[in-house]
Length: 355
Ligand code: NAP
Ligand code: ZN
Image 1 (cartoon, helix red, strand yellow):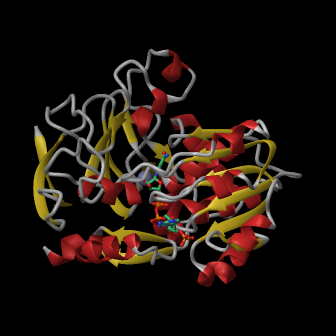
Image 2 (cartoon, rainbow, N blue to C red):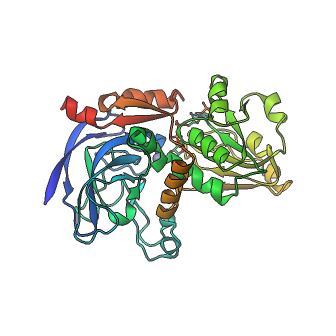
Image 3 (cartoon, rainbow, N blue to C red):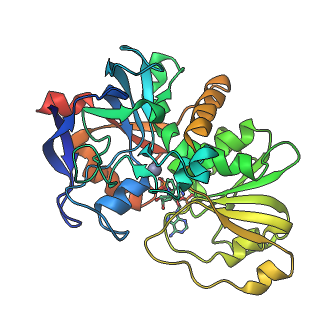
C-alpha cells in the first residue's frame, strides 16, 4: 500500500526543481507517518540537485531539515503517538549493528552505510529515498526526533535538524566551551548556528567571513567580532590564537591563512563539502605547530536529540527567511551568492495551496 505524495523534484542537474508526485509506503509496524509542515534548505540540497557531487539519483527530491506532525504510527511504535511534533534530519536508517551504530554514531555506519533522507537506497519500495520538499514522509521510529520547542518556533527549528547538529557535534567533540577561542568560517546556514551554539556552550566566538556586511549580524548572533577573511592584515592579527576553527564554507578556498590562526595543537574541522577541492595545503603550517585538520559529518541520532534539547533549553532556533515551495529555484540562486539570512525554510502548506 502506498500514498501519493506532493513534492518538488529536480529531474536532471540542469533543470529547475518543479512539481512532482510519487508514492510513499504506508507505515509498517515500526514506522511513523509525518505530515511535513516546514523543510529547511541546506546547501547540500543544492549540491545534490544540481549534480555538483557525484552520484545524484534523479528524480531528486531534496530536503533533510524536516519538522511536522505525526499522523499515524505502526503497531510496534512506542516512542511516538499521533499528534506529536517531530523532526527528521539527514538519515532515515543504518545497519544498527556495526561499531559506529553501536556507539550511536549512525552517520559513520560501516555496515550498509547510513541511508540518507534523500538520495539513499530505499529498501522498502526499491529505488532511492526522496526527501522533505514534500507534503509527508514515512520514517522508522528510531530515526525520528522529538521537538519540544513552542509551536510558533517550528519553522525556525527545522534547520536544527542538519545545520544545528552538523555544528553542535564537532563543537562538542572538540571541546568548545569556557576559556576556548572558537572561529566559525562562513556565516551561512551552518555558520550562523555554529555561532549561536558555540556561544551557548560558553566559548569566545569569532566569525571569519568574506562578507564584511554581516558584521552586525555576527555580533547579534553571539560573536565577539567578524574577521574579514580576505583581508590579510586582519588575518595576520589573529595568527596563532584559536583553539578550534569550524569551517562551514561551501566553496573551494585557501585553507592556509585559516590554519595559521590556530594555536599550537589547535584543530580546524571541515564540515563544508565544496564541489571542487581546496588548493593544496602548506604542510609546514600544520607541522610546525602540531596543528590538526579534521572533518565531521552531521551527528548521530541520540546526539541530534541532545542538540534539539540543548537548543530548546537555551532558547536557540535558526534565523530564517520563509519561502513558498515555488520560490525554491530563486532561493538556490541566492544561496550560491551567499545571500541568505541565514536559512531558507519552505512553508510546505504553500505547495498544497498552489496545487
Ligand atoms: P550556506 O548557507 O550557503 O553558507 C556557506 C557560507 O560559506 C556562505 O554564506 C559564505 O559565508 C561562505 N562562502 C561561500 N562562498 C565562499 C567562498 N568562495 N569563499 C569563502 N567563503 C564562502 O551553506 P550551508 O548550508 O551552511 O552549507 C555549507 C557547506 O556545508 C556545504 O558545502 C554543505 O554541503 C556542507 N554540509 C556539510 C554537512 C556535514 O555533515 N559535514 C552537513 C550539512 C552541510 P560568508 O558570506 O560569511 O563568507
Ligand atoms: Zn544539510
